[in-house]
Image (cartoon, rainbow, N blue to C red; front, top):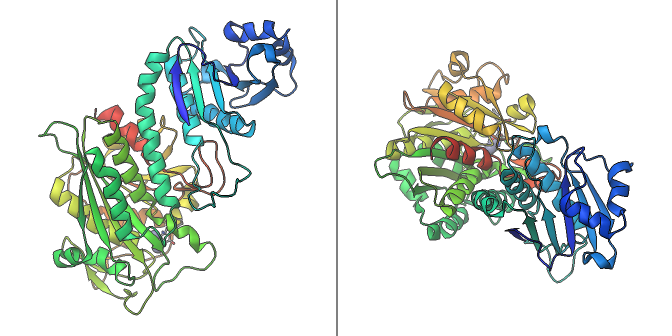
Length: 502
Ligand code: BES
Ligand code: ZN
Ligand code: ZN
């Protein structure tokens, strides 16, 4: 689908779209269309039982030939004073669905309002409508038989946004398009089945995708990691014939002496639970246990695509968690890269064991000024926050303030969760330095997991852990994407970077 920002309608468009705020007068191009059609628009505009200008609501009107278009679509924008970038994206997403279900091939969206009452300028409104439309157009159909046309096949090929602000909108959208490409990369990685995406193949995909954009990609293989003493990450992977990898991506778009921002992702390409095996029901969903790593890859892709003027390092720990005669066991004591020992009490609490070595390595090698990890870490975060909010555990109020302000305007929702001495105490072992499971009960399971990670963060380093177990996967179609991988984390962190570090 090609999105364009034009000053005038393209003659190839078969459908015209009019986004309209509640109470907005019939004016401009909409008014001309109304007179051309003998008042067809006004008839539905003022007294429709069906169209109430609600955010994302659509009404399709078939047009007579004289107009040169086959149909017009009214797109509700809700209350003008409530318009935000998030709402614009949702309206754009709903428009995408309406265009596809009406069989539209080429649409022209009229955006000329002049001055609006909302805080959102017209160029931002247009660019975020376009972002929503783009995000919603995502589909993962590479494994479908292309020889047979499928019902929901769409031919939507082009959408033009027409306004006097087209040049500015185009500029704003340029950045958002790079963001959307990063979200798509993350979604693709999460949706990829685990027989196709495993540590070795994952590392190859990252190289192929990021190297051409100028990202430096370093891959540590299993032999190297064993030698280096990454005993924690390696223990998790030892039960699988698919050997672990660590991939470190470096984008140096900023000043040479500027310390990088660091992002670390959990990349368990399939989590059976290992010897502490999971129940069979919905175990297939555990292909998404690499959602944190996918977000890091998506973020790096977006930044490199738009040549962001920042230094960023992204590191992902890739393993498959399998039961086998060589698998690690409950009861094992393993040694992490930083020299600390860990008593394993449940092999299904594996994400923290992969992350701790990845976190240690990136701190040692790159000394990031801020470190954020993302992981589908605990079922407990789903119990606490559901599927809309990602939980953020943060050791630094200033860092949290930045994440909160950016997250709130990125289309993602973030919620701060507690760390603390009581959680840390639970993660200390009698026979080793730490244990990978809380001592007392399952209560506070997302916080004890975060407290474990905190042991591996250097003193004084601002750090946040995002538990995205609830948000990395959509269990049904949503306005901005279908059932499946969501790309959670990419939008919030992309905005976090562009707001505070560029
Ligand atoms: N990958 C899971 C967490 C998860 C759950 C991700 C649901 C996505 C959706 C993680 O490795 C896990 O199994 N955690 C255990 C930890 C427990 C054994 C302490 C959990 O949450 O039950
Ligand atoms: Zn697990
Ligand atoms: Zn897991």
